[in-house]
Length: 454
Ligand SMILES: Cc1cc2nc3c(=O)[nH]c(=O)nc-3n(C[C@H](O)[C@H](O)[C@H](O)COP(=O)(O)OP(=O)(O)OC[C@H]3O[C@@H](n4cnc5c(N)ncnc54)[C@H](O)[C@@H]3O)c2cc1C
Image 1: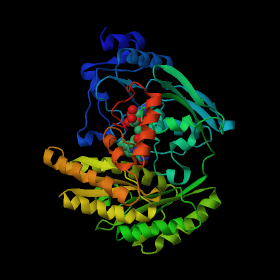
Image 2: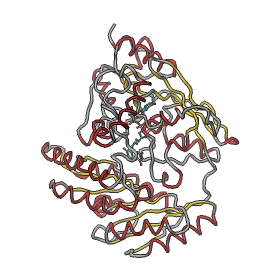
Image 3: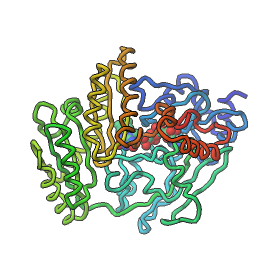
Image 4: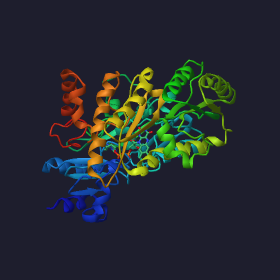
């Protein structure tokens, strides 16, 4: 039986993709670095049982299984290198929504935006807000432990997950955790699956913890002559006596690229930008705004507090920054290194030094409060030698992150693009422990092979 015919028996012919219909399942947001995979077929199951049947067939036949959410990942995690892609987009049921208990159980294919919207419509709040929320899915957010701006105050996706239902090798549906808010009975396998990038199992549903939303949100924008003064202001904001919900930055080069659509009037010359937000109940948010305005003013060219209504427009603009950078020259290699917060300015400046050494235009932006940069090298996609230079520059970022006491990925994961780098980063004992975990869940090496660990 062909792969497609076997999959059709499980999910129905209309939910199997081959030939040209398979193409959209072969890439993710790393397309700007020319990354494309290959696969035998993609299947779009509608239930966990169908996912389990596919995984079971793949194990019986020694076929690789690659889970795919919204395909917005920046690490090539869902880019297949042969085998079967399982697209989770039809697993879209919200199985439970309990506003009074502040929780929800949703299937993996529900988009991030729908999770946020449903929580909001029921008077609650799901804080994680990675960009690309319209396309990314809950399962992909869990598999990458996605962050986003608000992670600074509220934590990353994993902080909001109390239970996971997943299909494990060789094709069993297993539930870890559940609706309970605390559970220390066993090893914490819920959070072992969080961030596992599809290499330990396929998430089919999850229990989410929700909270009441902050009543007020006040944005603050501050501009500085350089990264040094901007990052000193980050430290001042952290010492201000309030916890901002987010502290984001754009370096001067990123500001220049994205300034066209910016709702604010920006002075020329590529200032370094900080975007902050004070939130909470009305009184708390106002107090926070006051403290932040004062803390951010030292060394600033200007500090603006747009009216509360202006926040949405500003955040929508911030969400377009990655795509504006992608579009600038057509090609981009971007790495999401993370460094201790006090080394942020150095990491931002050295990103430019690395770019200059390779003759490549660089810029960075990211989650300043978390020390998480999106350091990017830009190139014309029609010039393969430029792409190679950008890649070589990106490799230097990994050494930089380590030298500064950080890590090679703050939120996008290792996927395919960084899968070979762990051994160079961690001690042999740590690598061995990581391998042992993987082998316990995936003894045949068929779950998203080649990702995270080579
Ligand atoms: C414009 C833009 C902005 C972004 N901003 C942020 C940001 O602020 N913070 C951030 O953290 N990320 C950000 N990202 C990256 C990306 O959106 C996140 O990593 C997101 O969580 C990926 O979700 P996805 O559903 O698209 O997953 P995919 O890209 O489809 O897959 C990502 C990984 O998860 C695995 N996977 C997917 N679904 C499942 C499942 N159900 N079970 C098991 N494994 C699965 C895949 O195999 C792959 O390894 C951004 C991306 C874009 C394009």
